[in-house]
Amino acid sequence: MANQNNPNSEIDLGELSRKAKNFFSRMGDSFFEAILFFKKYFIVIIVLLAAGVALGIYKDRSKHVYMHKIFVVPNFGSVDYLYEGIEALDTKAKQNDYAFLTQMGIKNPSAISKIEVEPVVDIYELAGKNPNPDAENPEFVNYQIFRLMSEKGDINKVMVDKITARNYKSHIITVTTIGMTEKEDVLTPILNHFNSSVYYKELQEQGKKDLDTAIAGKEASIKQIDDILAAVSQRTNSGSLVAYNDNTDLSELVKSKNRLSEELAQNRIDRINYNKIVKGGSSMLNVRDYSITSGKMKYIYPILFILLFVFAVRFVRFYKRQVEKRKKVIVNE
Image 1 (tube, rainbow, N blue to C red):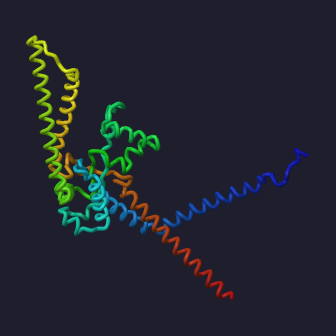
Image 2 (image 1 turned 30 degrees about the vertical axis):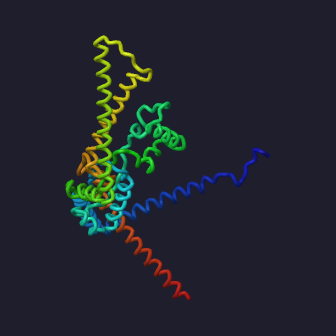
Image 3 (image 1 turned 180 degrees about the horizontal axis):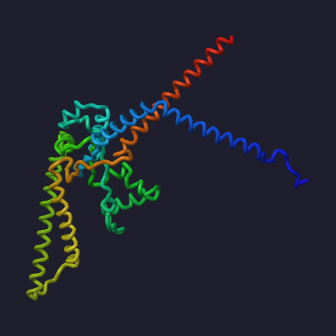
């Protein structure tokens, strides 16, 4: 019948009770064994605790990790050169190639644990603040490229993707060291290293000449527009009736002047940056890097020492038991 008890599905309460009693009995035995263990090795445990605390305090005080950052602008298409170069320097640091780093001018290279570079993410600068769909300009092209890229993946990943990252104007070089340092000891030698490239120095000279030519051309164009606007204003104020060609559009002249003025202002800023291949900007030194273990080694080391000691004792006991088993087997044979 449907309501008949199935022997296979019945719960043996007595068996469960015995298992529960055995479990708590084993728990009690383990707890008591732990008491006997600490009682037997009390002095050793105290020594290990003291040694762990002392070593942890020393590590907490003497092994602080610091980060040193500097903003840079790579010029003349040197962004790939910068990223590949930083990766190479990081490899040198990890390989303990202190001779190479010292030759660069870095003091105490053994303190360096990491060298990295990342972009200063400014998506508005990359894509253009106000892209005009009707205007064929580089900003709109960048905007369209970014839009297509973001449609195929997470926009946050696209912004920091290696390909996208190298299109930003500003970047940050970060050097991580054990202990504090000075800018002249680490950051300055790294910048000097990148600014010593013979190839990019040639590009720098040509780039500066081209930029000076562009600045002079824009200044001349702005002056011509100013002369035209001044002439129109003078004739208008004098009341003269002047017939203008249909193609003359004063509003377009004003727009052209504003555009040229903005470009000229940017060119003058670029001219300042062009005095270096990789132009260094503001820097931040000795920023403490707090990790999950920072200031906690005085607690971690004692626990670690005790765990290692317990493991060693249990391993020795296991080894002795196995040896005794094999001796008995040999005797019985």
